[in-house]
Amino acid sequence: MRFAPHMDTALEEAQAAAARGEVPVGAVLVAPSGQVVARAGNRTRELSDPSAHAEMLVIRAACAAAASERLPGHVLYVTLEPCAMCAAAIAAARIARVVYGAADPKSGGVAHGARVFSHPQAHHVPEVIDGIGAAASEALLKGFFAARRDLSSD
Amino acid sequence: MRFAPHMDTALEEAQAAAARGEVPVGAVLVAPSGQVVARAGNRTRELSDPSAHAEMLVIRAACAAAASERLPGHVLYVTLEPCAMCAAAIAAARIARVVYGAADPKSGGVAHGARVFSHPQAHHVPEVIDGIGAAASEALLKGFFAARRDLSSD
Image (cartoon, rainbow over all chains, first blue to last red; front, top):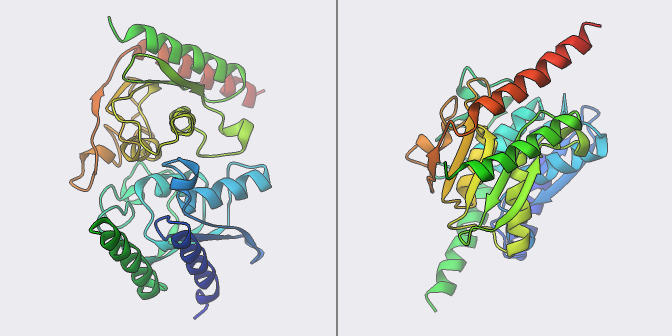
């Protein structure tokens, strides 16, 4: 499966996020050359920044490195369906393709809720491929939230 | 008009953004005490960061200063209707009220397009007050884009 290696990297970032006490979501951004230009996991708690989702961190890092607001031809791998904030940032950065793992009926903004790419207003709509590595991503998220529930009931 | 002073500050930030060659949008974040805790204009070009909208910059600055991902009771003033990215960040930060100036049928995500606060999925919906300082905001934006068109036709 040609998506698997980059999604494996994104899952590693999600695991590292969980180890830091962050919601386990990881992302990888790949240039048209095939080179990984950024990888990150959630850091909202560490940075006290509600915008520090994995997707936002890789987009910001890759744009800074490229000295450009846009990343044409790039592919974003992320373990969870992006929220509306991240989906709109993906469109703003003109990312060509988004490959994501688990669906997020509660907070997703691609296939759920605001469905950011599904409005006539969307200036740029990436190709979207879902369900890649979904089981591993879901297992990580479920384990993380189950552990937090156990802690809070102690 | 009780909103005017903070919106005037946001308009100053929008003017400063225009002077830097950025799309003229400005924002101010006000704490429950009434203190201005952050003010910013767009810096997407300067920072090569498609997420560096005025709203995102004030939310990130205020969250960092408060060492918190959430800003309960805070009021955000912004000269233009927030886009879907900023609207979702506003919800994530639990901002109590959003006061905005001009409507943005092309890229707005509050009253147009993705309408981020209008889905059952929205975890937090701020009070929204629109049209404050709208004429001044629109005049700034129209002047900015007219000047860019003139430049590009030279």
